[in-house]
Image (cartoon, rainbow, N blue to C red; front, top):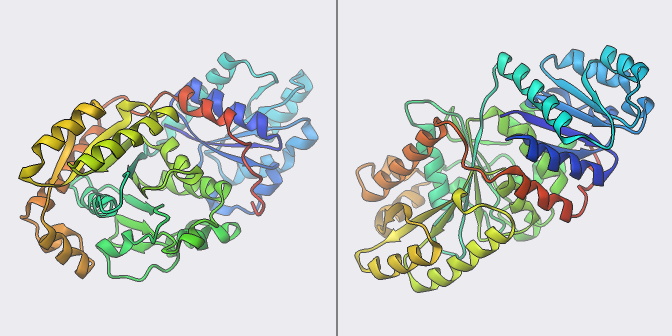
Length: 403
């Protein structure tokens, strides 16, 4: 897995680059509209990327001097130039500036794929972190999505493998995931960071997080639906592209919201965990959620059914839910209101307040299964063409105003 930053002043071509990247392999791409000079003040955030793709109408627009400086400051960054004129003179000038490959429009998918494979081979020689991304979403309030996401994130971080975990609270209805496993007041929130994206470097981002432990960090949500609505797509996409490579696991708490922001998270997710309860209302709503996700291009193989707050009276609705969704429960978490409430009131993970409880054991099992699958070859994420193909039907990526 390599992390790609694609830069262009043409939104349609930027979407095509993303689409072809998805077809070429399992790559994670961040899009931004602009020229290389706009990256000049991004500081060490560029260290998160393995490949820089610059789409330019001419050598002048490619800003070779800027790219040469970026390549010198970020030595592991592989640069690829896309330009209409790929003459020998252009090739020589681009190579001197640090571009490894020069391709011309219209892009040949095979040549583009080969260029990305060469970039990936170079990155693997230098070592790169393979970040696993998971989203937790539900169709109804009260399902316990935030509780499950926060506690699973903590459980993964405490496994013997010592993985670094980031929980991002994208729940846009009074987000409170940080308070479920910590008593700290978040130093900043997602909307606040996105509003200051021009300031964001590694140190700024780190001081904006809740540090539950050395290996478990939380980016708090807005806690205010009005503020949550102020987050812009392009800024969230940049933030995710910069932050994810520094962690082994990134978990999103999406709550019940499906919009352009949550779709950014879903597009990047290897697994989508549907947190439901064994009840007839959840059967109907869960089926509708699944239909919506499938219609958006997310493969059913990505989806995992998490049955939360399960009781012994839930056998019939559980059978109905599994039948309607066409999947068995990936994990069952028993109902234990007293244990869960006590943990939430203390602002502690349930594994610390009641380690021997059924809830804590179930969440621990879920975390272990997620971590175990992360070590297996292959990925469960849907093929890139179905996800990135939808980018061509969306509006062009908005310009990152302060990038």
